[in-house]
Length: 324
Image (cartoon, rainbow, N blue to C red; front, side):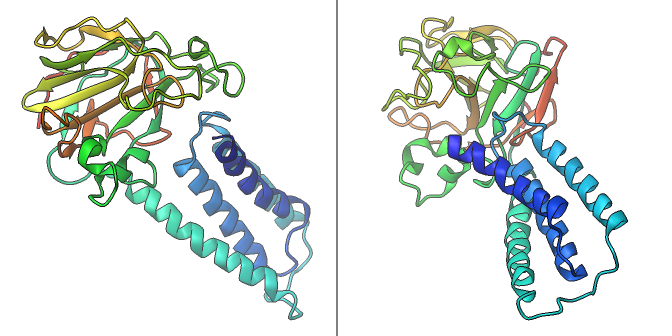
């Protein structure tokens, strides 16, 4: 993940610095550079995993780009429209390629922010009051790693396709940081660790598991994808909440729960890179493969959450009955 964190920050910054320090001498390249930098910042903001640096960095880069472009327009002498030499067409060609590529990437990310047509379920908020960042969420792999499992050709589709519209939530402070440092190994160092998990709907507990260990970051518990988890059946839809803290699960298979009831605490069990709450909805799977059902999109209080959304739950969550 450190490579991802580095590239999503340095690549847009490189284009901003190009504009600020050594802008093109012709208008074609100048505006192509402006377009390329804008699209790269947009793609980074939509598709990047902004757990570090914090989620507001793309906004800061966009503001810096506006300042750089404005400064260069004010200070720049008159520029020719096109390059004055053959060599000058090389950066133009490079910038056309960059602009085209990131136009496609940004459209893919924007399209994935729309809730899929058809069946969806409305759920109550599954965590206690706080400020939360969506690390995964959306309708395609462009902004949701779980969505890759919707594809029948994916090797894990048969067993875990139900998580295709899954949402991963982390807690952040008012400055956007989810922990001190970049990636400490101790799970308790993360803001979300130990946060109470609430039943997002009224229903029956289909599966409850709570004895798996919390793993040091970034180690994973191979073979136990959901770790400690609770699978609820609400109005004919299965709701999985996963990666609970060891020993925190408060319900057992066969129990009935009401919306807003505490069922566990966020931990770092299972195949997870760091502490977070995973939640997804699906049609019921099979007893042998409980996470294999057809995935169902989720709305929280009418909102389809996607990567890098901020959810400010400063008031206690309201109980919600699932509606399809």
